[in-house]
Length: 508
Image 1 (cartoon, rainbow, N blue to C red):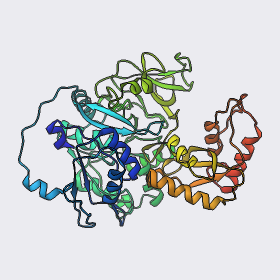
Image 2 (image 1 turned 90 degrees about the vertical axis):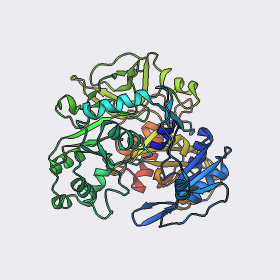
Image 3 (image 1 turned 135 degrees about the vertical axis):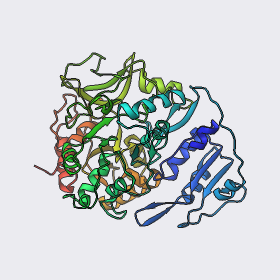
Image 4 (image 1 turned 180 degrees about the vertical axis):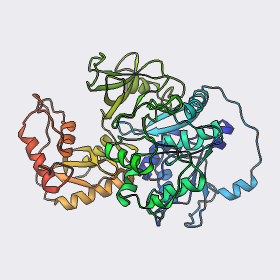
């Protein structure tokens, strides 16, 4: 990534957990000259060969990169295709140093894909100049770190946090950044984070709530933490998904330091809402991501674009212009950029999240308003999964919705209506659909349940009531809309979920 930045080349990093199909669509959209990969990744005690996934993606893609460069790790040796595949070590030994290439402030630094609601990923463009300004400012203003401090963003590099706060921001600010290959648990235990913080004198840890929940699950009493003295650690920052109050208090009591929630997006590239350490911490309110960060005028809008009063839930929007660092457009798709973010409320950037603001200006983000769900910090399109489930020959129609998950924040479930005359059992179709989603998207989707239902709840115009399906699964109260075709369907769905013990529908 840093070499690309030095050369003025545009990079696009793809998370290693995606299946070949997801890689193919990104290759066809970005049209890279070179693809760089390792021979494998490590998942606890397993090695995941990457080259077969890459080979299939390249075989299926319309665009054919000139070369791949493969780092042969000692755990798995990749088969190489002569002429196309180059060995990283060989290329490195023959390489000649070059001077940095000046670029315009508005030239793209990278493209980072995020799930779109159509199944086609959106290539978020990051520019060079605004990006550097925003990240430099945020390190002190938001995170409270100074040049020379050690900053650890415990994130995958393929996520926006990995770009902004693992690779770029700490180095721009003169900090040491920590790169860690592993998980918060089982590498080797639930004390991994605390061990690394002590070893490297980390001042700020930034991770996702999923990571803290994983530690809490394996070490609920914080026994592993007792082994390590952490005088260097001053703040724990969380972002990437909704931060539940129970985990907030668990982390706060365990670490006895400020635990700071904040909220931003791949599109913004840096925090939009936070409790800004650099200007003095305000009182924390569990469930709130804090106050708007300097440069963002965050408002809550109603259906007609009107401003809502405190505590009224609506669309979270940012009044234009956006500050430096935010996306200037989508990769080679200006029309989609306007349609996705600017058309809904003229004069505003629509974030795609719903939420509300309290009397003191604190923002509460309640989740996506479209069909994008957040699984362990990864934004995934349920619409894309729905298309895949619907492609099964036994399925007449279906709905895929995200339901609450204690560890991952959200996970998808599928509700399927079978074609007339189909006799396939629920267990078999569930396994076939799990395999299909894993093959097309990858294990990252965490699709584990498909439930056969007689029919799906719809409005009289035929629109599936997905939000109500989520509420039923999560055990959340909902009002039956006057436009529903048949209210009895809701009871049927509730009973189906209860019988399978999925979500909180079975909790009477």
